[in-house]
Length: 322
Image (tube, rainbow, N blue to C red; front, side, top):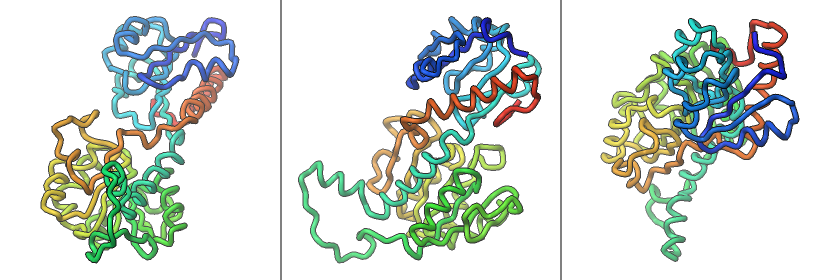
């Protein structure tokens, strides 16, 4: 159980998000503070009953947090947390799943459109004040999405919303999910993960919106990339380790893949020496798919609902992990 409202302390920890200011605007009367660095968090973690955190979390912090009872993750992904350790210490954990589903789906659609319409190339030309002439080579022209086939790997909230967006552009949508019985979520057809390799040759665009699990780590490897059309596009708004990055670089260098839109990489920030920076047919965004002006408030909605549940003694949390 959490302490009473007057005795509760919430710590917000993120390098950029302004969680405390948005929390203060709600006038809850709950004591809180914000830190923006790992050192600051380590110095103050002993004060918190509730911690709202994502990338700054380190599992050894549990040793310095005797009051900690609940972690509200700022991110939908929770692979950074040692769930067994938290459970053993009686610390509950909930994800922010759903807080960014609209934003990530829209970002994936934006990457698809940008690559189809060759917007990165246009921006490069603008910087050079170059007015490109008409193009005779079909492969170098802008393209249309209508009639193209999109394969979405991970047909959950984000994937389902992406499917509905793609249908508005008259695309055919195939979905892959762990349990196909869970529904189509806007896709024309839904398939199990075991069918992925059979479906890859049919796709003009492959979009990754799945969580990172032992089953999905390096799911798109050299073998999977070899199954894709040379004219196909890969979009990754999932996690960097869902793709074998070395195999992707090799496929792009050998022109066995038309383009890639990447919001997540194995190492973040993407190292300056990575070949991914240099490909003209690769659009890299810095893990910003879920980052919008509304994100803090979306996370706080989940946090406050979970605090209410904990105060009432409920055992089930929204987006419960532990």
